[in-house]
Image (cartoon, rainbow, N blue to C red; front, top):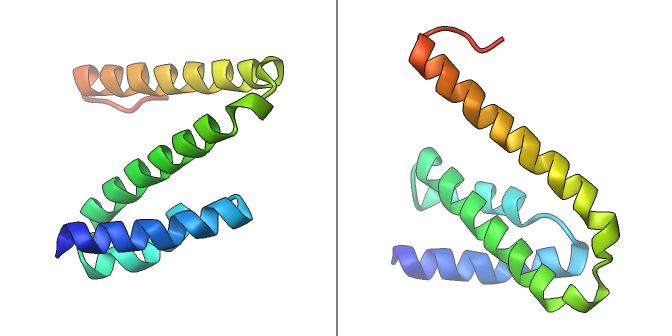
Length: 98
């Protein structure tokens, strides 16, 4: 039942995201908590949204201008690494990350 629910919700919202360009994560978080808890739904929604975005990027890879994409990807990567080390520091110091 759970796999069928995830599959059905994902197929419907993949269509919405493909047509509109956004929305799969939003609509997933409206429907999935009825089948799972809010914590599990958040993880499933994030994973499904990432997979849908990667699938669309792969499908349209011939139209991607990599020169325009490299700077935002680098900045996002640095932000993610910074957050990771900030959380590590917070955990090791048992204090706030300021």
